[in-house]
Length: 137
Figure 1 (cartoon, rainbow, N blue to C red):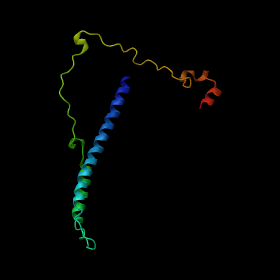
Figure 2: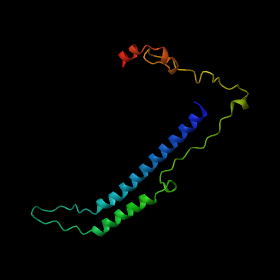
Figure 3: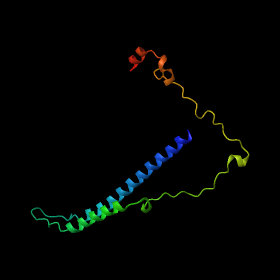
Figure 4: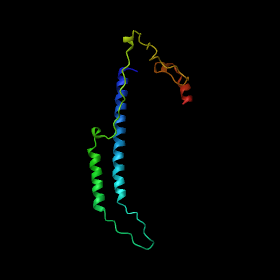
């Protein structure tokens, strides 16, 4: 790949992984606060015909939701709870330091071979019979 392609690919994946990380962290926050909301639900058994006590945790549940919203809006990558830890590895000795020649990269960007006669490079478009290509579409 060219230098620009590598740079753009790396930047794109960096954005993608940051977005995935943020999404996952925020889902974890919502799940945590959601479990606190679940704890407010009275699940004690009630005999048939007996009235269930009225819900009296409105203020508490409202505060949990406000706390969740604040946690979501205050979240930053620096405060993320999941952090990747790389193991410390001894750096590899470069080939030049060992006296080896670098690998041959001449075939790295060779043109792809056509697998089908349906694909025509742009440089050969004028040579193609239009009636032939319409039948193949």
